[in-house]
Image (cartoon, rainbow, N blue to C red):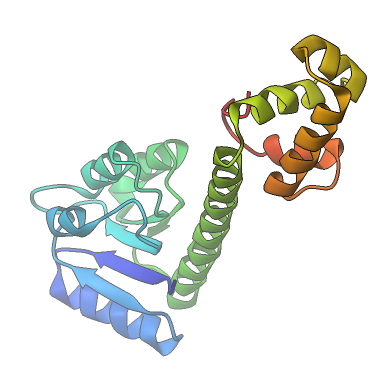
Length: 204
């Protein structure tokens, strides 16, 4: 997926200047005349970053940022701020914005921040994909395999698991083999480390 810098500003001269600047460094961009227009097109899988003016008629940059968080759109947001907007931008940083740039901005510094935001979003996307793959593997397990896996994660040996679940030790060994195969791990330690990446408790 190719990252795009979404320029959201009501001033066409600003939008054009930013698009020219970004293209001079080989950065793809798309411009939007309002927060409402971008929000109508935004999805949870939009990729890249937003260059967002704080003050716009209609929906302000801060309001758009809040709406994006409400719909779980994780795209990094870089605010473009005038001097009087800095306190608002600082608060937005505390609320999860990626960065802010005060006008007039240094061209190279702005593009560098966009590139850094792209890298940040790539890492986020990679983590999300990795977690999705773990959940997909978990979904392959049968209910009995989940029960055995919970016992494995508790550090119990095959004989103890067999006794606890009332099944033959050979059956436990078969389940263990299937669990490792489906989860694509080679040991209980790897299994534990893999499931530790999940931010919730779906594995138990």
